[in-house]
Image 1: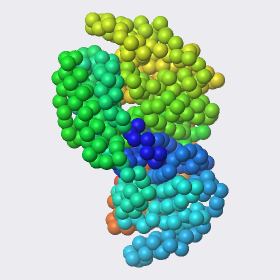
Image 2: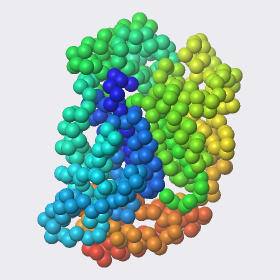
Image 3: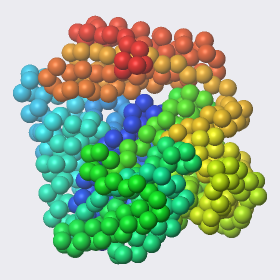
Length: 273
Length: 273
């Protein structure tokens, strides 16, 4: 979808709690949105249990793809089931090594509160060989960054507050610098009275007006009794003006077509969608 | 995790809206919970864009794994970007064929409301060769079931109401019949005053008391300033009594250990967790 910028991103989620449905994967949605707005093409999500082999499978699969950026969340902490770094090391065929910079970050956090460095705390400073720690402004487990074969791999904690803090302070500036110069624009429409199967050919017709414009329809309520459709129109382009122009042209056309076929169409903001 | 019943399930989510973060993947959480309670070991989640190649990759990867059950959601409908059945056909190396049973289901829905069978509506009746349609009690696109090499593949729509209706009326009875005779029990604890890194060795100690018992800790608030931990203790066993006994024994031990180390521990219900 979007502009084929060649900047693909893969997201890895580590955690049984996601697979057993105890926790909804809001981290993936948050990162997907952030990366899309930065011009990256979020191409895969892989969700794996807290087991070294499964985590290693996810990293190996992502590393053998054309992804430029790989970001994992979860499994980064002091407990026995935090195995993401072991899984990554296994995928890379390297050992975990005590990283002095990471140890210093962790020591500072705990010793500032009069707490000792136990075995479980030191564990968070054992990184795959070649990796660098990223400071965690909102918690104790440092994030991890490793660059190889033209790919950037980032390992973030699963606690949303910590994940977001590390992303915004460290990943976002870096991803902007190394990513595509791409701008993203979007519009939201709601139509009432047209079933999705009748809207299908109209969507195809409207999309022809924009090269990197994408219309996604989401049916709400019944397709047959009082159908309501939400449309998310997105455009990516090399300039903000071009993205806005493209999204505007396609959205106008879609409104016109839906109205002509008896739909009651409203444009809404992102919040009302 | 849980009892190694050998009944692994893989979940596939098809949809750009999930990858770009427009929609949070509640379908995966709902299915993960349902399957876990049925005794299945939910082992992977794969999220792919609305493209035939990517969808085919997901099914091929799942089909070459040891999964007994593969369930996809999304990409099943009348619009141009509903490509899940094409992707599955491609993974299986078969053609899409007009399925008379599916066509009848769709015809009934539309003609009952005086609507004709357009090309976009007929599209929903083109199934991979060898597949059977599953009635959709809450919408128009039939679900799809195909059995091969000892695996069951189910293709469900992405609209949550339709996905849930098809699952509960058709998949759940079948999955109960073909699945493991396994029972699942759980407890929820909240502790205040102990950082996760201090709780780590206590968790390991408590878990030794149960064979198929799993404790997952979720840190809330800061690890250092007023740490709050949530514990989800789960047990799987061949009988309900055994699962309850295991989860009870491990939870009691964990409570005792946390209290002895200065934690204020509360047991809560699933809803308060």
